[in-house]
Image (cartoon, rainbow, N blue to C red; front, side, top):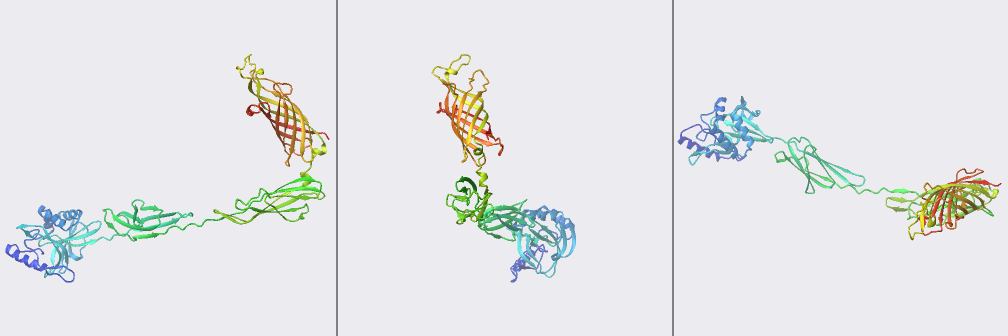
Length: 560
């Protein structure tokens, strides 16, 4: 089984028989077969190797190299290993002297001339027995050298990404042998999962691979046994929103399995967020107005602007009234569902009254993320005497003058249509005209203690028509008004207007509406900004063609 030194065929056959017998002698401890002799007809190369030059000659022999490739293929070694073995044998970078082969660890390409000790083992040895009379490259596996003394050999190593292969070429025969295969330690891939939860309970799991990843091709990630993605260069990371068991497997750049430090991680789901309850307090609003009555002043207290913030809970409103000295007027009042009440105070107590309102959510209510509860307070003040003062009553009737500008739009009779003697088509008895117009009114008004006012006036409208194709006729009119003054000093009013009094064909009553906003409150001669409109009764079924609107000022002149 080891190579043999004798050449005669008869001796060689006997020796081979001895060697084969020796091969059957198996160590009970480790399974290696003991071999005790070298040389013979099964040698790869003759004469025996002795020097570096003979090794190079060995590596340059095409027949030897073909046999070497053959046995490396039988041994199942990768093609890149075979190429490196052939390259080292053909072109050894350096040949150095060494002690024992077992202690030699040369760099790739360096060859060591060393001594293979008795008791050392080989994973396999190449040899060339005759098969059907023809030398055939073959392998003998798991051998221990059990000869009487060590033998000399050339030793070299081949390193790949995964293993270090140590080979020897015994000098007596040149039978290439594999001493050992040592796996190169691979630093395992470190895989981590960072779990993050948003306030609304959404999960983000970030999977990362770290460590020495130079030899790693990819890391496969599975979630609950189902493929979920891969970690690859350059990021070596992925994200997922799924909880469960994350499992990891890795392969190197050749597709072979690669170790992973942690094969699985459990990612818990995010907790269901607890809703944040917002406490919504009620809002308080209170207004007060005053009216003169025989026994004093009647205060109307209005808290309808108060609210709990939800229709599911009604507000409870309590009212306290304090006189100008700060003393309470009567008892605390709890309002009914109308949220209004009236309180009468005497005329003789002069000054400002304070009304305090407290609104409470009668029964706490939770709706969605809101809880409606609590209370709120607010105040209003009023001086009844000032609020009900009526200047007009003291002064008597007042004269007023209005200056206004706007427009009139009317359906006018066909008889007025005269444009260069043109006439309307047959059967058409009216035509529409929109006319810019200024107006002046003079009148007299009487305001009463309850802030109502009646007034009458006479005025004229002045058309500003910019073309000869339109009618130019200035209407004379009379208005009868009824106006109501509000607490803030403005008034709103309505009435009837008699428009275009001097022309029978175009005369029409009209509905009058207007308002006035004070421009100089408290002045002896008050001035109001006016807005006024009329809806003509003639052709009232065509509102968009029978109206007038204008705006301006009203100046009031007291008579006392």
